[in-house]
Length: 604
Image (cartoon, rainbow, N blue to C red):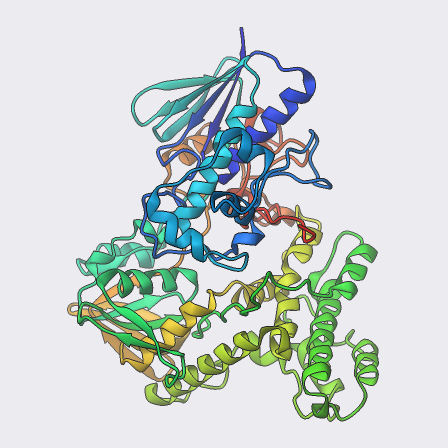
């Protein structure tokens, strides 16, 4: 009998798993196999990238910086199968380039993509629907690589339970069918955790409440025109909600050189009034407008520190001082190039001072600020434009006593400055320093993954900092937000909100500031939690004792523990599961780099 594999989840990770199965079979001469593909979302695209969604929502990744194909030098065990990046695929669709895989399998799209295809550059942020089309094409190519001895069975239904039946898994689907497999790979992507007690209370209050989730699945029609809507979250989820309730309701952002954002918003009267807040209270910084792919940050000190490190690796003590030195060096190198008169001493003297600064006493597993402050102090007087990294860790620190009007002036002026820096891009010392902070996240995460480094407050603080300065929206979204503020449609509440439901709506308090709103929307996507997820499939894994939380140092995390070599799950008794593998986003607390789409090599 042919062996069988079930892949639960047919988004980007499901594609990559299928493609690697094909590569291995091709290298080994094939063999009889049945591959079951299970997903209730669009196969190939997955839920986030479904091709029938509104094209208002865009990727937060650039067209030239994403691929679904392996490349020479990739850490894979079977031969690579080189394919086009998304932008190279778009070039082929426009008739500007060719590729053997495109020649072999073709590539066509509906006409409604024509305008977007014409306008797309390597540094463009394509619509999520267009990325879904690229994914589905890559899926088609992956399936075509499978030998003739492989049968692919597609199941357009959700997996709701998994149980052992002898030497196989029996996977029950929502439509009542059962799939039997000799091995199961769960590549489910974002599976929402159970609501917090506060979220559940809001849901039960009888008031309008939109819980956290995939923006395209959140029902923004519940947010009425003209009403105050409290929004928690100031990252990509908020910018998505903002676009869905303005652009998709007929509002227009018009170029206007006299506006500080560069845009003027023409309202329709169908928009809500946003009261926006988050833990930090300040919007994620916009990405720089390089008019090309981003530069490669110089992280030589960080990489040297990683190479010299031995487990257990303390991020706060072993890695953060080196990364902070890299960020300060990047800042002053660009400053010396664009405004040399701002340096009070030669650049070499500044770089020497950065490396000579005694950071041992400041380095801590609990806080990244002492190192930043120590470097700023060590460079005191060397420039008329000093880099104050500590400010960017918490841009609204010290604003606790500001009233609502004063706070909003502060945030809006900061956003205008953020836009200026993003436009300066290559010539912004600030963006150069912060880009090093952002770029350091991946190597730092890899260096400390799988329990190699203890869980430290400094690492969590740094990752949140790097996300705010490096994973913010495209610049046009920040322009749109400031235009909405100037149109009187946005109010910033500040950090650390306390929200309560009342008979008439929601009251939110940030320090001395308080607002009332009739609706509440949580504009963020919380990570999966193997321990508490109400997802039926996840609950069945817990009930069957097929998983246990990854717990480095005895401290449980939200991720299932998986084996280093095989990604097979680990049972509560420590035994390795014989068949079940989990990959991708649910394993993010154990393994690094599980969220971002694969990036092509910089030389491409």
